[in-house]
Amino acid sequence: MGSDKVIQISDSDFDNKVLKSTIPSLVDFWAPWCGPCKAIGPVISELAEEFDGKIQITKMNVDDSPSTPGKYGIRAIPTLILFKDGKIVDQITGAVGKAQLTALINKAL
Amino acid sequence: MDTDFQLIIVGGGPAGLTAGLYAARSRLKALLVEKGAVGGQVLTTEWIDNYPGFPEGISGFDLIDKMAAQAKRFGLETKIATVTSMDLAPPVKTIFFEDNSQFTCQSVIIANGARPNTLGIPGEKELTGKGVSYCATCDGPFYRDQEVVVVGGGDTAVQEAEHLTKFASKVTVVHRRDTLRATRILQEKAMANSRVSFIWNTEVIAIKGGESGVERLVLRATDGTESEINVQGIFILIGTIPNNESLPLDQLETDSSDFVKTDQEMRTNLPGVMAVGDIRSKNVRQVINAAGEGATATLAAETYLHQLKSTTID
Image (cartoon, rainbow over the protein chains, first blue to last red):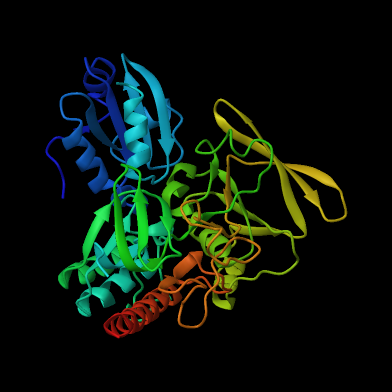
């Protein structure tokens, strides 16, 4: 169950959509071959609904967009990075539960 | 006895989902609670070749997807929430959630699972996600044409070492003994792969690196000699530790590593409380066992609920 509130981003629009965003953004770096990434998909969609308007929830496929994950030294997925005003607030690696992700997001509010 | 549910299953891996399937088919008023999405550790397994019924093998994700769909088909109720604590001793058991809500029930199946064990060595925590990994399936593709080390000698370590050769130019298995515990067929595949090599009787004692990630490992052989190996990644696959943070360890009987003890019907020392899957004290941790234990536990829960009902009437 995907949510249309989850924004798909790529290397080409990362700067515009995330770094220059007026509200904080959570970026979910994932890939289709990663089971845990797919498993947290529904949680990501729920968060997008719950934090609609306050936090932008985005997803980046690291296969299609290799340069942004490279820039942030990502060598494990799922990695979720929270950005505010173009800077990293905090990040989590691994398929964590909804409570932990909510706690992460709250750091930017 | 007035409770919210007859049975609450905590954890949505293969054990919990199978318990849930049996509970739904028995028409029990049951709830399965999972902290994130269903799955558990099996999601970190790229390919499962030893789960019967799938002659070509199946990915961990697809297997879980099918198990969840099957339980759903019979109407299993699920809730995404983190359990903070449980009171399991009284006849009416209570499960407490992070959002301060709670549910009561008559029986509980603990299927919390386990997570990868860590080495606990310098550099490990600092470099996790930057070259230190516990999941070859998730992170393998980041090591294209690089050299990596796998620590461990069990099924997971040996299978994933072989899997990593799809990406890494060289995979070195560092094992503290001189023989592997892994299943023969997995050993044979790894040994036959020219890109997998072995360093025996040796432990990794430190991980070194910087901003860009892991650079090298410090090794110590059983005879005390130390050496270094240059690699960009280290996959630590040395067994599991139980997810027992929410369990009442003062009520439940556990083994010396805090895995929950049960009898052959999956019953713990507490009446109406069963434990299944990777959190259970046992020697074999396979998906097939977890599923079988889930079925056994729900049948044991049914027997318990039946007895409870007859004693209440008397």
